Image (cartoon, rainbow over all chains, first blue to last red; front, side):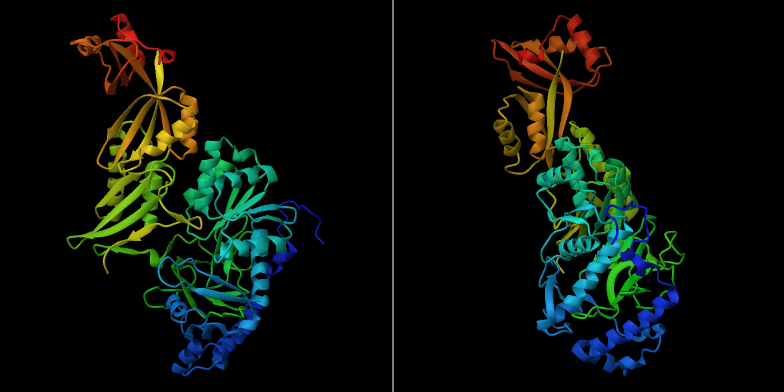
Length: 443
Length: 140
């Protein structure tokens, strides 16, 4: 057994052994698992079988990993079209857990786990926390939402698997959250980065100095966040802020995570096969080029997904990581292919708006983009919550701020933007995730 | 000589003014004077209160962003030429009035003007030299 409370720099945690597997062994393991999972999906998932047959392809045609590119993609609408259980490869007797997306419109997407799947998920989450320097003896405040959302239970099982103490507080109830953080002495926290910023703001109001608490690491995910947000979190609280990646369709959180180097996210390639493709054509891109992340679940029994189009835009990092892990890294995800808005024929990403807000205000306030159409013309409004840093008691100063923000956005986006200041805490948040775009344009 | 004024950001929508007033009422803080600077979409509510630190705490706890600024309160006789006399004291100086508002004052025929100056110390000096009666915080 591991002695309790090992120092954080002990990077060869036994849990993480597979992170350091030699590449040729990893590739053998991947091929073996790929062949098994493709057979499983072919035998049990009618949609997948039909698609393979249409191509005149049988599972045995996978002879090397380079054959994976011949398999059909799976997309998010496939999950909607087969709602609720159409992509399950296991009978319900073997399924021990269901989760669902928080989908704001229409039906959610549903995902399933066997006992074995929960075990794999716990192990990749334990390896994620270990990569962020956590270990037995750590106290982890889990402020991801518990429920249909995968964040809460995923982090919970992973931290327990690691041997850490879990505080299953879930998201929300910020004042109690801060009280527990102080009183229980959590050494790590996990939640969405947006929610942690909210905790920082609230702590300042209540006069709690987060720097004086034992908290030393935060594992933040479930939405894209920027390097500037990381700088702000680390400077304001003195903790290390790590990015974790995952999506419900694949397993939940724990698909990939940063290590101590904070230079890209290692993907747990023994369970998830990575490809980067050109979003428009689906063409496989060489390592290092930016494109859409495509993932195949190599171990998942209840709901194997083959070549799932994540819509997340990133690139594989070619160079090996200084931490010594052999599993490869992707660059941090800054945007999603789905995030792209077409406004008056111009491509706009919410991340561009975010960059302007950070540049002008120095910190990132909550904001929301609202799209409407007037007389056949798209209108873009950006609502920005007033922060203590920018609030002035003269109308002239506030109007000047709105004008400065609008001009900076127009310069970057090349379209007219109406900036509106709104009261703090009035922009809707769900599961701790910020809802960035409201599109009211008639389709 | 300077007194503390609290300002908060309020959206220009029905019902948005009541929340800060309730927060102050619940904290037992009395509003002495207030002014609302408004635009089409939002306003800045400026307040002189009986207990600024308690009011600031109550408003922040209620989720408002509060700015405390130093303003100058001046007593003006409630008769023609009252304000002109005060403004004359500031004429030919570089002191600029950013905004001002007035309210009646309890002890008789007088009104109180709240001034936000760009340079409050210079303004105070000029006003005192001209014999204008400045009001201290405890009098409010």
